[in-house]
Length: 255
Image (tube, rainbow, N blue to C red):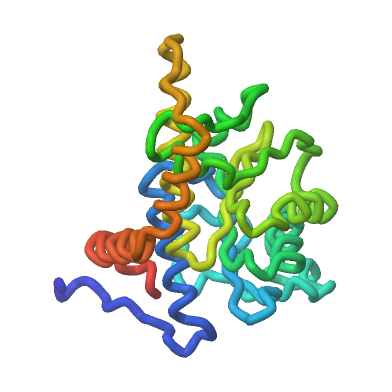
C-alpha cells in the first residue's frame, strides 16, 4: 500500500459486522454491473431468527458509496422507525419492513429497477419463457404482480409480502416497476438477481428478433430449475469472487 493511502478502518465492533460487509459488497457490485438506480432501490438482510430485525441501506445514498458501517439496523416491529433521525426511505420501510415482518424465510431481499428485468415487467405478458438454461432456472419460481398501485408504502408492501408466501417463489416480477428477489443469504439473493437479469436480457433480445422462439417443455424447464436449485455452492463461490474483486478495486466497502 502506498504511504500516501490511509489504511481502511474496519469497524469490526459494529453489530453484525460480517453481514454488513456482505451487504455492502452486494451494493458495490450491483453498481459496477450498472443495475443500480441512482440513489434509489434497497437491499435488506435479516439478522435475527424471526427475520424481523434487519440491515438495510440508508436513505438516498448511491450504491457505489455504501460500506459496512453505512447500514441501518432496523426492527420491522418498531412503529417509531420513521421518527428516527436516520430514518430509512419510507418506500423501503414499506416494502422491506413488510416482507421481513411477514416472511421469516425471506432472509435477504433485493429490489432493483435493472433494465432488462424492468422491460420484462413492462410487457403486457411479463412471463419469462424457458428459452435457454438461464430462463429455465426460474421456471415456476416467480410471481407476477399485475396490480401496481404506486410507491411501495406499507399497504403496498403488505400486499407484495402476501404474494411471496410460498417459499418456492423467490422472485416477484413487479409489473410496471422492476423486480424483487429473495434469498436465504446475501450470496443466494445476489446470485439469483444476477442470473435473473441475464435471463431477462436473453429473453428480451430474443423477442426483438421477431423470430419464433424455441421454448423448452414444462418438463425439461422444471428439470433444469430443480438441477440449478440443487447445484452445490455456486452462489457462495460467485459471491466470494465478487468480494475478491472488490478487495482489489474497492476495498473501502469493508469500512
